[in-house]
Amino acid sequence: MFWAERKLAAMSDPVVPDRPVKGRGAVSNPTGRFEPAVRQRIDDGWEHREEDDLPPPRTTVQVDATRTILARNDSPDIGFDRSINAYRGCEHGCVYCFARPTHAYFGLSSGLDFETRIFIKPDAPRLLEAELRKKGYDPAPIAMGTNTDPYQPLEREHRITRGVLEVLRAFRHPFTIVTKGHLVTRDLDILGPMGKENLCRVGLSVTTLDRDLARKMEPRASTPAKRIEAIRLLAEAGVPAGVMAAPMIPALNDMELERILEAAADAGAVWAAHTVLRLPHEIKDLMREWLEAHAPLKAKHVLSLVREMRGGKLNDPNFGSRMRGEGAYAEALSLRARLAKKRLGLDRKLPPLDCSKFARPARAGDQLALL
Image (cartoon, rainbow, N blue to C red):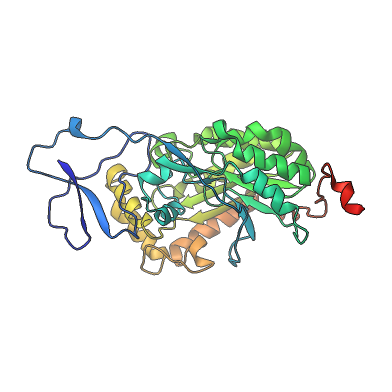
């Protein structure tokens, strides 16, 4: 067996199939979609043995020397216009993650590269403070965890999210967080007081309550039980906590929807939301590989139902429908969610986060500007 790089048109040699990697979500590491050639393992005629395989990939960290930290959007189906992502790539390894294709912009793979080659933004707190001090800055809630998880394992060491929260606390700036990491509870000293002042909201993404399924589908995220515990600790600290049952994958985890909402409500959640599986760009192939490796008897059925919700395709990029899907199956899922939220008191309308408390803290030398 050897690695070969070749033009996309030349695909005749026998390819050695990929196998799941322990502790990682993606089964393979396909070439980025912008690359002119693909790199694959080829059978060279010698008998392939497992001991010939490369060792499991380790996580590597690179510094992202970004000069701005607030990402802006005007998407009509997203409830925020600005967000912060302290990391590019995510070690949680969720196979279905819609952010995976962004690694292609760096010449990297949306597969194993996305969860093993992580870019960190250590200057994020400094850049955020500079942005908030600009004269024309108009405050509105900042969303965190919209692309990659702010509490992925690397946060324990690098504490970038913690630094961002300290800046937001100093400016009394409202924000929201969505995470799969129990590590969010480390920052209750900031989140609790700000939650009580209606300056923050936190949602835990819970895809399944089945620990075995979670270990295969999102291998380095906190266990489902730890995420439910995080909801409880946040609620007890005064943070309006909620649950994101996302994504719901037909015939794989969607039968758990009500149980997820019930567990979250019992833990003190006050709001809930759900989305259905999205398969943009390379994700459709990564998800197909994952299903064939971990749920082979369900693979065709799952993808067939995804197509049913996406107008016959595996992805629908249109605003609105991309989050909830269309057709009978998606409508039934939405009805189940509405009924469960009403029954559990998770359908209450929360007040908007309070932007009126925003204030720039004084710095040494600020008084000189008045002279």
